[in-house]
Length: 197
Image (cartoon, rainbow, N blue to C red):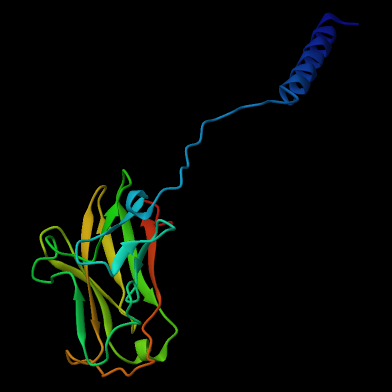
C-alpha cells in the first residue's frame, strides 16, 4: 500500500474515533444546586402587603394574608347610606389602609385590579382604592366597577393605599341591605426588563 494512502487511512480512523468519543462524554451525572424558596407572610413577601394604621378592618389574617373585612367585629357589614374611609387621602403617608412594597432587588410593574361578581359593584363606584406614592401624590385608582392601576415600582419602593367604601352618603348610588361589594384585590407583577409576569 502506498505511504500516502496508508497515512490517509490512519488519519480517517483517528477522526472517526474522535467523533465517537466526543458524542458520548459521560453516561450519567448528578449535580445539586441550592434553592431558597421560603413561604412568608404578605408583609414580608416579594410583593409586600402590609397592614396600615387605619383601624382593625384591615389586618393580617390567620393565613398570614392581608384582608379587608367589614365583619371583623360584631358588625355584619357596612351601613347603608354611609361613607367609610380607611386612611387619610390628605396624608396617606401618615394614615393608610395598607402599604404595597416591591421587596425585590429589581424594578417591577405592579398591575392592580379589583375582581367581583356582584351587580352592586359593577353598577357604581361605591368602592375604590386610591394609591399614593411616598410624596402623597395620587398615582392610581382601582375601583369595583373596573378602574385599574399600573405602578412602576423601583426596588424597595412603597405605595400607600386609602380605601373608600361609599354606600350612598358621599354621592355614590345608595346601596341597600343585602347589596354586596365583596371581591378580590388582584396584583399582577411584570418584570420591567422582559415584560414577563
